[in-house]
Each structure stands twice: as structure tokens, then as C-alpha cells.
Image (cartoon, rainbow, N blue to C red; front, side, top):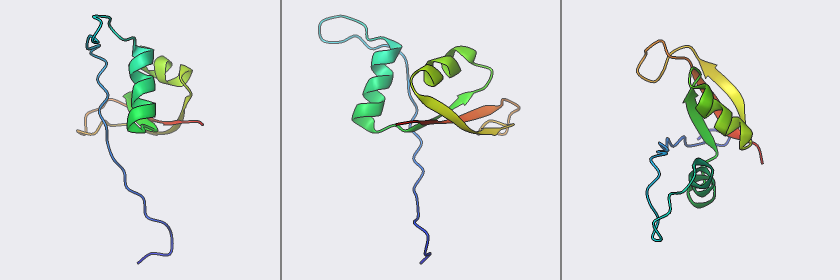
Length: 87
């Protein structure tokens, strides 16, 4: 066993598809992201660097860039930013 603490990385795919609520209203991206953070404990996301809209949403909600890969998870040339929530 290692002397350093082991960590587990769990990938959670966030879908901003805006399901309707019981009262028929449609939650905003902000509401969905807040729910993911509070209810599911999301503390990090990976986002395509070329998707400036999504990057802006996460950065404005308290996420900060902690890394970058030149390729996406499938090895394609789509740069991915790794963001973590600042608390």
C-alpha cells in the first residue's frame, strides 16, 4: 500500500438538455449546474477548449483551469481543458 493517499477519478457527463420540471418550467443551465454541484458533488469537468460558451459558463460559476490536453478522450485533435471548482 502506498504512503500517499489514493484518489478515485469518477467521470460524470453533464447533460444540459433542460428537462421540464413538475410545474412545467424549464431549468436554466445555472440551475442544472448548481444541482450537479450540490446534489451529485461534481467538483471537476472536462470541456472542449473550442466550446467558448461552455468554458465561459464553467469559469463564471467558479471553476478554474487546472490542466489541458491536446487530444480529447478518443485521441482526436480537440483540445480539452480540465476545470476544477474553487470553493
